[in-house]
Image (cartoon, each protein chain N blue to C red):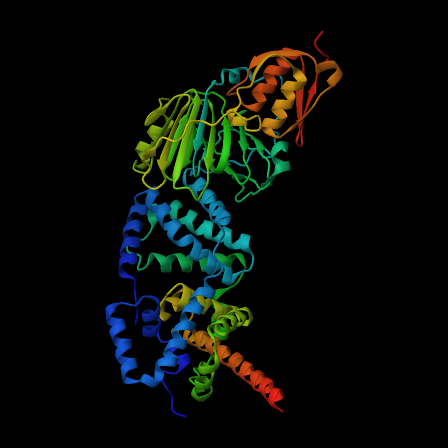
Length: 204
Length: 381
């Protein structure tokens, strides 16, 4: 199910049409709207900030340069920009999209559950603990899981769109997110154990 | 244990749940309220999942660019917008400064005695003239060759920095300012992009207007000197003219063919500003929004406010003023030249023209190397 911010997309489409006719103000507006989040996304793909900056610039430069030949009916301007940026960065990093796709094919869906331990955790956790946990988690997760999380939670893309951007199937995207969230739970379990040990030591 | 579709992990990755957390509307609100009424035991899980979704969104969005990076990206993109002709990569390393006194400089002597102070978010500059690595720029600037054809100068020091352009014009870039331009094959106009604050002294050339672009706004001069103060946070673009005339107009509403015609013609159009006039534009609408406060009192440090009027002024004093205004070093023989008197009014002229005038009066020559200007002369006897 796709939850689209319909007004935003209508405005994007309008701006897109204006860019095609050479409207600089529309182009400026699209840049203003997306360059920050694109840069943010790019930063998940490469830690080299100047490479990311260059890639973001190039995406926009290309749009303006090729404005006369832009497709009239772009499904989503935002989707188009993100996919273009990813290609640019991977090109710069010399990655081949076909290679990474293969490695994800044998990921199995794993809906295992730990409802019990979760229930306990929810009670004892404070907000600040959660915030810290997320930060630690994002720092240690594999790049592609962070990428999927970013597109899902920060950029608000649907699973279908994320699959299109990352050139993998939807199942893989679900797996990336699921694994990331599982790591979150695991790290919580570690914390639970360590706090248990702490309390044990305190009482005995 | 049975699979629970409303466990913490499942909720965090549930699309409808995420949508409700991030953009709640009446429908989703009703749905999740009904869910909670039905499963009151899930309240804590839902609260926790909600918090996680918000945290994930917040934390995955931590890598947004700084304002500086945004400005940098935009100025590169903008410089490409007005520069579509393919560039020839010729004479890339030719020096800006040539010790060619009296050769090729005469026509520039006509430089307008006009000063314009602009406050602009972003200004574009294209040069017909060949690109060169100026030694003056190299010292203070972090050169950013984004593409081989786009020259970017960024002043990350806390002092003004002088950038010398190919046609003899000079730009004093204030700290934080960024200037980008292309050494294009554009024979009809000279154009730059600037973010931040800079003082321009532009060589007069009626055939090749000097254009400043900003958020769809263009400022056109045929030859003058002016200040551009552009903070990216500011909503307005301010233009201040001390002497001379410039015009400012919006180009975002013009189609390409008309734009070229407007940009190329030697006449000034749009809002015309004369000396000591100031104006402010809204970045968004490109409309005049206010006339700002009167021009501040002259300060020796601020090159844009200086008159550079010398009446029997010893050359040592003249050089001291230039050093301070342009943040350059001028080496000369104090004993031979220092006390020579100078009569000149050098307002509105690029640095090189000022040096030219002074050297003519002193029967001297100048050289530029690194951040230093060396005056060679026998003295005024």
